[in-house]
Image 1: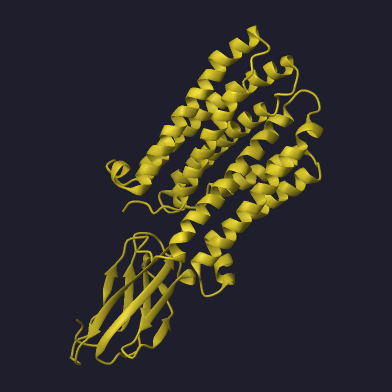
Image 2 (image 1 turned 45 degrees about the vertical axis):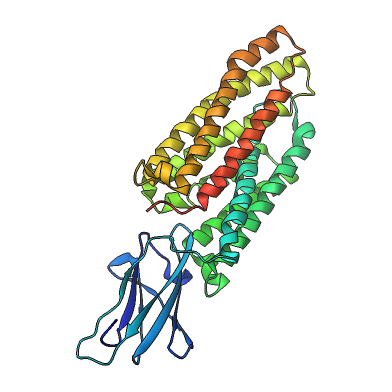
Length: 375
């Protein structure tokens, strides 16, 4: 209970918040709602403030919805009471962890839809860029054979990332779409989609493969700047995630590239298998190491690994990565020697299992991107 009308509202968050993508609504005693103009405190980017008009005695309800600097929305509410006028005034100061309590319904549906779209879009982007890298270094002209597959993967990446951008803007629910698109996270989301679109156009037009690789690499670079890495030790997290995604591109693209060789002569398959298996095994180790380091950066304590949803997803991803490293070891030290001695040996069944596990791991990564960090 406050003894007089407070001059302002101050909300303190655990991450930097973007005032342009935030809303504060004061519900008055008569039920009327007043939209407040939020702003960052000049001395603390974690604080959101809003000036209040003089409030008569009564009960009030404040509904807030904010977007953190990493693009993750959060919402919540609290109430306060203004008592009879007194000589002293005070300001309600609320300490809030990001993200706050989410309402049920459409808001809860967003992380699931966005996670699936991100998983599909990013996995297609990584796969396409990796396949283009192996295609560029392949012997002979394989373009006409694999081009339809590459174009289809490019279309999936561009469409999924566009839909992810749309659902993200819808959920942020800023005062205007222009404010959303002009924010830091909004610009990064637009840049990722733009590069994926340019990548699709380049593979559809059969232009130089090196240009396609540039667009793919640019989209991967931007992807490393979106999400949790932007809010927790970004100077270390962002490079780690970029390396993580780059290695994943080599890994996923290599496996899919090898799967596309099944109709080729045994000699060509053996050459491509030797080339892919070595690169994929190294890439899988890099993905695992960088993933573990990034998890240690994002998790406040090791106990969060076993007590939070985010930690549980990390465990699931690590289990999947361990299985995939096992596949890589099998290809390099078991499959290749066996294929060399028996050209009729079919690696397709093993590759199918490996691709299935990859899909699961990538989808887990999509949910990680939209799961709140432990506080």
